[in-house]
Length: 472
Image 1 (cartoon, one colour):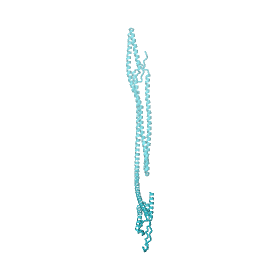
Image 2 (cartoon, rainbow, N blue to C red):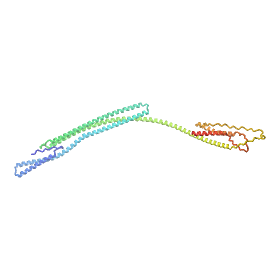
Image 3 (spheres, rainbow, N blue to C red):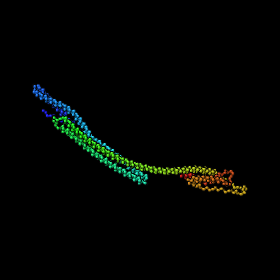
Image 4 (cartoon, helix red, strand yellow):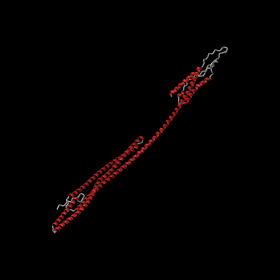
């Protein structure tokens, strides 16, 4: 009889399908061989009833074994499917535990890192805000020094106190930042611990695989109970799976608890630090705003005073300019009036000169008178002395030199204008000298003025007019 077939254990539980089929085929071949022997014996002749009974009993035993093997095969198939499904679920569970132990911890670590990064970002923003407040405070301090250099001791003390508070808060922020860095290091250590737990889980899985390989390599006798083997293998797999699951759950729970505690501590510290920084920043902003408000009010007051002074000076300048403009208008009118009067006087002088020239050219030649006869006059007639023409002095136009005195200017100019007319009238009012004229001769022209004085006055007036034109 052949050696018993060794049924190898499958990795997923149960036995290898090929081994079972080979075992069934061997049983069928043995059954067929026995049936052929029975037929051969029957054809050979009658046999011993005892042998026939023996063979029949063997055939029945073989048939029972075959049926049992078929039933066992069916059971093994069903159990194989069940164990396969259980193995798949266990594998999925192990992978899930592995992912939870790895990815879960990684996710927790990433979430923790994200929260820590957000806390760091908030701290950086707080530092930036503090720097801005410092800059604003320095600018306000500079403005205050420029605007009001006096009485700034109290403000300097407040600014120094604010700077001290800012420095303290900055130190606190640095301390919290160091604590956060230590928390990050702790998280790294926890991550390493989770990795070690993953290694332990993988080690357990390797041990499971090794046990399975040992079971596969072990020889199973034909009389070995297949159901007990399956049950024991299933219980062992479940036990190992449960232990791995419990270990992974424990590691994950510890990692999550530690990560949560670290996150809570970091959030509390960050919130505390941010709150203190916000309060300090608000106080600094408030002080800076008040200081800036006072500085702006002081600057506005000074600007109003400067504007008032500028308006006053502007009004004075406008009044002065208007007065000068009025004086220039008056002087211009006066100059125009003087020019008009001078032109009129020049025209009159020219007319007089023309008339004088005409009179001189029209004077007829005076004939010599014959001496009177003695019989006509007993005594010679005494001729009266000719009237003396008053000496005409050069006109001094002092009014033009003193231009701002309008009344003196007008009076002097009018006196000058009236003087020649007065002299002519005086000359006309004096008696004419007696002259002996021939009745037949024409009457000589007598204008009763000194021609040389008139020409001299006209020349002086023309020179003054030219001087005025040059000055203009």
